[in-house]
Image 1 (tube, rainbow, N blue to C red):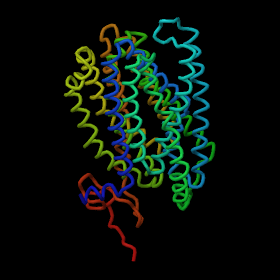
Image 2: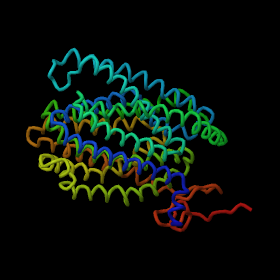
Image 3: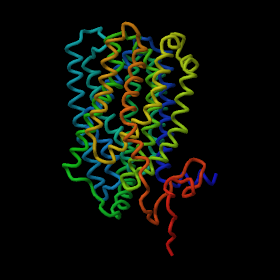
Image 4: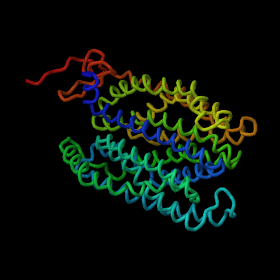
Length: 456
């Protein structure tokens, strides 16, 4: 218990564990949601709903201009500029989401014939536009809460959302609501925006602004720095979303609607495991931004937790894949097991890639991220149409694993050099980053490379 209290007293771990818990809660509700959806809706309805949801996520990410990562990187040290940085992110992302979603819905309405899986009515198109703008702000709120070191609120926000979404799914199924899958996914977002926006603007941001303003050199980055950071990171995110959110749409196009449904559980579990690594490294970016000279020491501690939590969990899920898919039904066990196992195996090389991406963000070198994501997208999206006639939906797993292995081999030397850098001199207020179960600041602590000096 003492070790646990010491662990949670460290802002790096407190934020990381909160975000990991959020991933578990969010993913648990997500799995239940799609299990219920698979039971109460037809395979075609699940496939269409999955494609529309992912289309909304794709548009939201592309039109957010990757402000979320910029907030995580720069909000921790924004000081008195914190509120203006958040407002800029909200306003720009929401406006761009409206424009992008309107264009996509107009295309789906006019260029797809009624009865086509991607055709939408005028009324549904309007709802889709509102939902996309709301989702953009809803997603940015998670990044804001992370940046102000209040990630436990992310757990509450997404826990309530997951519960309401699940209940609403049952309701729309009972009343046979058209496009019930998408409606139950998007409607709770709008209801939750108001209370959490008030929490952030009236309580958390003022407190964070006052605290971070006391740090030397605090303030938002100048516009050229922010634009350069977001430009490279945004381009990388375009390729990343093409691989993830566009995958169900691509599978519908080159294989079938049923194949998109079979991809769904494997993709859901994989995204959950990926988010565990993202949760830990997001907390690393926040603390590394505050103490850049010690970022590599924080990274060592983060790597230990990834190896103790994320990698074993991924391998266990790969072994238990048939049992997990049993809840979806025998068709999913037969068609989804291999792709789920392959995606879980790709989490092992993903560790190296994730640390390299974190290192690049802390150094404000984001154009390398664009190249990395472009290579991965080329392997995945190029391999799926080429090999789908032979491998079916399993092609997604093989292509993804191949991409991660290629990148891990390329980035391993750089990551190893970063982690092996010597520790700088400590300040009296340094925060320990000891291993799980070990004393913070003890001999096993990666920051404990020189004796601590006590202030008189």
